[in-house]
Image 1 (cartoon, rainbow over the protein chains, first blue to last red):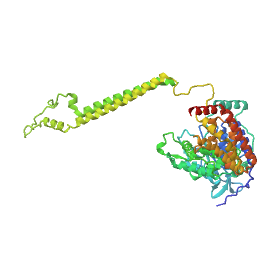
Image 2: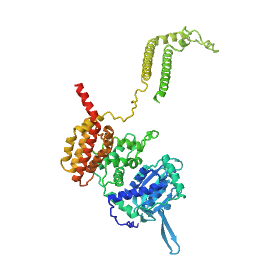
Image 3: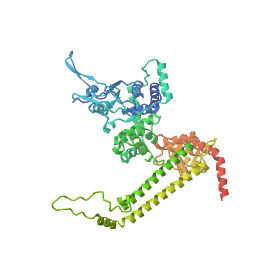
Image 4: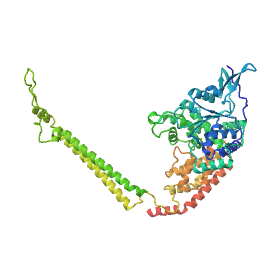
Amino acid sequence: MTQPTPASTPMSTPMSTEDATATASRVLDQVQQAVVGKREPLVLVLTALLAKGHVLIEDFPGLGKTLAARSFAQALGLDFSRAQFTPDLLPSDLTGSFLYDQRRGEFEFRQGPLFAGLLLADEINRTPPKTQSALLEAMQERQVTVEGETFALPDPFHVVATANPIEYEGTYPLPEAQLDRFLMRVGFGYPSLQEEYDVLARRMDRGREEIVLDQVTDAAGLRSMQEAVETVRVDPSVARYCVDVAVATREHREVLTGASPRGSLGLVLAARAFALVRGRDYVIPEDVKAIARPVLAHRITIKPELWMSASSGNSVVGDVLDRVATPSALER
Amino acid sequence: MADARQPRSGSSALAVLGVLAVTGLLLVLGTWAASIGPDDVADDQGSADVSLSRNTDANTATGPRAVPDPQPRRSQERESSGWVQPLATVLSGALALLVVLYVGRRVVAVVRRVAGVRRNPRQGTPPEVDFDTLPQHSPAVAQAILEDASDQRGTLAEGTPRHAIVACWHRFESQAAGVGVARLPHETSSEFTLRLLDLVAADRHSVSRLAALYREARFSDHELDEQARDQARAALDDLHADLAQRWAARLVDRAGDRDRVR
């Protein structure tokens, strides 16, 4: 087996907190030119990307999931590819495969859509588990192996997957173990009346369907922002608070399986990126509370006898946040 | 809106009472019927002699079959069920009493509620006034903060700027806790600040500045210098000045009330 080629990009210099916050703000402003309103979920998506994570956007059709992914790719200057996950999609359709070049008389590898800076995995729950797991493995390992040969994926590599919470017929819902690979699950929700009107007005002003956004940064710039996230300080009391929250989801009376240690790790990583977007180089408990639901809710399995009740991952996380003690004032 | 709901709640209470009464009556009748047996329910004059089937002679070699007289069996049953009837009577009486008591209590409750609504149709909703009202705890919290102002300022002057700011904020929390508005364990400093702001209607800007300095001192590793201490002192002074101005009149009234009570 061939060893993975090392990432072609060297370790970036961390951007300063002020520059990273300003760049993040400009990226969000650009994306909001395409996706009207929705600043809060867009901040969450950018937070996940800055934390080197992958995002699952789960919402009804027509709420701008695909548009948001494409807009982030444009504003962040990443190579964008889209794979429509259909029941007949094969793993090789994602990873790529070896094709015989008759002129040279040898097989050459033709890359699939996985080889992109930002991959939009549209309707990920419509493809069988075999293809889902190929994608999820690539997300975790950031490399793919085809015919015994391993290829490193570009750095940065992010997946924004979409799923539709209705029309379950003919779908393959992601198991909890695979949902765990997504740093966040975000919902956009319906726009307000004014926002919906703005969507129409902007489309009429534009005079065409497609939207072209200004590129704010590039792959190297995003890496540099991600390095800045690594410098964000987490006080031990805040890290312990993250652990307490994750553990409390496991002990909750309505929960069959709570958040794994990967959940508490995700909580810290996302809180650091969120703090940077908010202009700080240190995490406060408010950051943890702000990102706890999108980070933890999809990692929680409710007891089967409560499936018909109002209990959900979100309600459990909300309940846990209302009970777990935050760091006190005089712990230092 | 509240008035419109009243007739509906009254009629639903009556419907519940009706269902309860009917259920109770059926229970009493059922218990009575079970205790005296099916024949007595139909005719308590004794239908023992009435037989719905005719005894026929079996046309066999053994001759007519001897049919036992049902009368001894009935008298035997009556003897054995001699204790059941008083028990059933006592149980049904107790049940009826419970139903009557419950119904009576519900009727009294409904009558009281209807009477109360008629006396004061807006009871339960706070009176509407054309100015902003302040929550219940606010005078005590404001008074506690103002009485502790000089000591809190002194806390801010002691030790390193980082420790002084954290201690000053902690004192702020302690003052509120002393008058029953403690920071809840799950509350972050921002959530507590917002709650406190609502309680004392404090200057939002100065409290937010102080809270931000606290968070930086508590959770960051920034070098905090004397400038940070000065900023915290300025925010604290602004907060105290604003509270004193906002609450002066009401706190004087409270002090006067206390003196009169003494």
